[in-house]
Image (tube, rainbow, N blue to C red):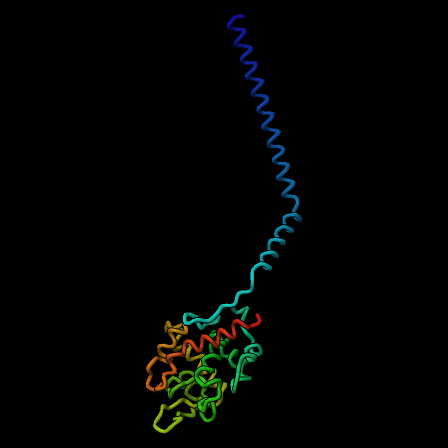
Length: 242
């Protein structure tokens, strides 16, 4: 057999092999494409799997309750899960009972957590049972005499009942026309004089609002101010129905 004949047979063999490769590749692409089309055209299967996955995720993830701490920011966190006045009232004691809606209203107006407002009132007045919470003070925020700030918050034409001591020679405390005024004042005061000046957490607020070794705190109650407020807030938030 001469070289010319061998060459022709070799070319024929290579041609056949190449042709078979092309046919095989075409069959593979066609099968893959058909499978993809089938998957794409079956939205029911895809949606069902997605729904099952979402449902499983919701059932497996317990509802989260954000606990308060000294680093807790007093601005409201999640508007969708805010406590109602009725729900907050379930946790209030003493003379603060029934004021849940007032705390919620003032908190919503100033974007301050109403649970913090209520806990602060409980800390400052022993759940509203101190003389400071009674008339003529109606003061449930432990607000000392501050006529300039009172005027700035309520306006110069709003009547200011003035200030008065609880005991002769003691601290002069700001008086309010009503408990509702006291709650509203406190929410605005915290917003404008604390949050907007960079003091957003319970710990940061304590250093100015109720500092340790303050002159009007001879019994040292301010040393446990953060701890007590955090405890009250945790009790409400952990048992809050969201």
